[in-house]
Image (tube, rainbow, N blue to C red; front, side, top):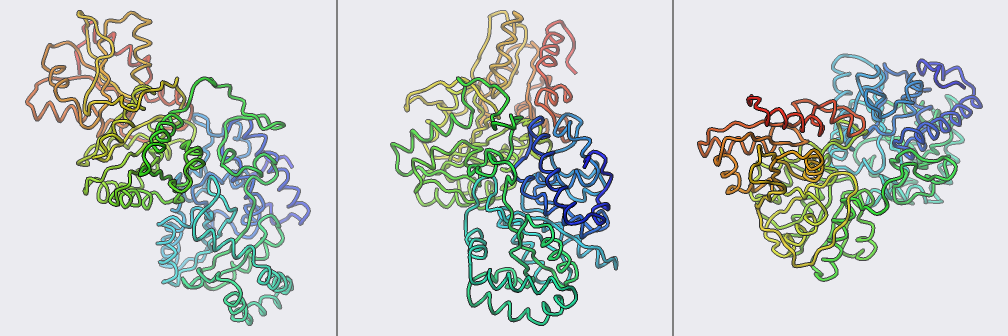
Length: 627
């Protein structure tokens, strides 16, 4: 089938069983070929092909609300709702989003880039529907990794206490990004692997295949089914919440999926449909992936599975470097422990977990728990290191504020993927962490310019270990630089990176922008003093006071985060409090959500690219008045 000619999902209802299975094969191959060209979320979409087809076969989108937790597994949904023709621009600047996007299609009723939100939204939609005396179905698809998130469990608890019907699809592929962990995973394993129950379930399913007779048998024997489950395995968790349970169902058998979904559709109460799928199905490299390599991938060669982007093998990612420095410290200090909320591979913590499995903890997709867990370890005299993506850190704001900073508990937190991250778009850009963290007392917030400063800051944190230490690191790779354990930094100090006696202006920046700016200024022979404002909190008050009072030469503050709450805002407050009557130029992100695209495309679009910075510097040095 030519998938680019699909206009909407209604055609599915006219297809035979064979045609539906042929369509699934076509979609799976289309996704593999498309993602191999553009990059994107591969494994989750390959695993949900038959389920998405069955959902759109049984339900009537957009009248019925079908949506996906996190949203990166919506590629099949996008194809079936008429967007296959746009996949050449998937995740590209001004192209098709890699997540559900309400402005893209009437079939996208919810959008999110963080997990565990869909069921909360579904409960609200169900209540609103019933208040409006409407009758459509609400069908959130939630993964086994996302169902354990605190918000999912809170919503599940709420759903069990009301009579408003939701059909919750539990997509159980035993993976979040990497292998799923925890009590819920163990429970689902018990359900999948109980031979006694599954044998009875198969017999039970065969009865259900007989139309209305099957439906009658289901209603008449549900209490027997519940008794059987309680007698052989502990899988009553959803029914203990007051929600009916159907499954487990083979997530790659379209006919079986359709039958069970139709039964769920007719059920009077909220129901969980437990669907067992294989993440990466149809592509051997993704099927055999246990670490999450194929969860999200850059462009790759379909035949051999090799990533096409060359990269510089001599460089290391920022994540690898900080993990390596922590590893060296874990070797000499038995009290250091490491935590991740389901991001072992993404945060390059594989080696930590391999070398010190008893001192490394993956708490699953649960950022709130991860940060309070960090606080509990700290108050128990351990020295916790935790790595969290900037975009996900904001989910645990109260835990950072209330449980860590308020009690002034020592820890080291790596804010990974800080700044603009690219193709994942506005849900993943790490541009809010400075604004979030800077008002919180007791916190030390640092942004290294290179690997040396990164390793020095880790040393500083573990040598002193008397504060909540936070370090921002961007996505990308740099040259590694080793440092001695005793090589530390003085807290709150900035450095002058480039300066001649006759400098014409001062440029203040931090993070990896320092080295980028230095390189350009050197190549253009510009007489600019560069300040490495590496400590965003506390700032170097002595240097700041000198910069803003020593002369009237222009000052430019350059950041690649949201302007509100940024270092520029902090400096403005400082000048006001010290009664320093001085203005400065400020380049940073405006008050809106940035688009998806390559980092450079977003920088250009937002006017925070290096050419804009240099042009502004030249204007200031040539006498243009500050605004």
